[in-house]
Image 1 (spheres, rainbow, N blue to C red):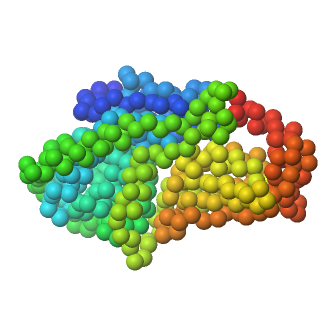
Image 2 (image 1 turned 60 degrees about the vertical axis):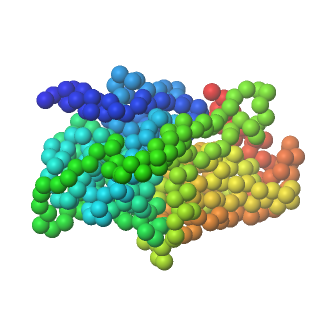
Image 3 (image 1 turned 180 degrees about the horizontal axis):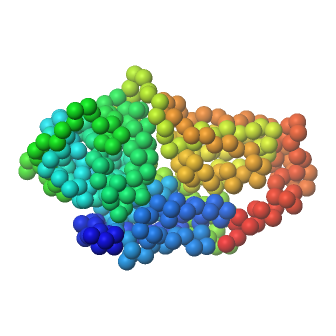
Length: 396
């Protein structure tokens, strides 16, 4: 079978997936022109996504509904109304507490494998979000993602995304006492692993008694509602105050993760795993208290506080979208921020101060500005080097 024929066959198997919709106003590039984000286009295995002039677009004729873009975009600029994730979690939760393999439609022998049971997901495994994987880790049996067919798959280029997603899910799961780690078959093959006949369940048909159906449909409806939830990421127009042109909102998948963290008990000890958030530090010798990093932050993870004489900048790590967002770096005209990858820790759920300082007045425009040894006596907008960059970043 040719590569094109294989892609067409996959597209037919993914036809149960509803159409993916792109929301350009949620894109990081719409929020800050100099961000130059192309994560969605880089991850798309069929080149169905283009980013032109900073604006993402989706060609439905080339899209195979793999779902990678849905969670790979940090601000979730791609959505679809989809009840499958909720049904997948329900299916896994209903199975005996034995290891279970999650399968993609391309798996050559779904009824034989190392686990005693398997679930046919009807999706590319790389399309499963960290939030869905964490739900599986908490509510169901031991989960294995059987990625062995990825090497020969036409969509195999997204396998690194799958590995990254599993690592992120395990990072969040490390903060939950009852969560089991999610494993990949290609990375953790048990010794003497042998294929055997097994039961295969359909993720679209959870094996629950009739009295459980109402709960399934209720949760599925919540999943669809969350996917359709309007996220107003940017507003334009001269009549809109500057403070209202950049609304802040938490993407639904991150909100689902935080809801899980709030509902479940934390572990006695937290194992170190990478998380899709950033450990941010600020150089006090550079920060002039302009507050632009907090203003451009899409989720309000950064908070700028001031009483007129003093200022503070604080970080709520769990709200941060990490280096894949990174919008605070180009937004800072003083290059005062440094971002490093963060690890699982109970501290990610607590707000932490990044910098405290005194305020004075800009020598030219009288706007508030940080004062201290080595800091300039004018704000960034009154310095020509910064003013030009600011105008270019805001004007599209």
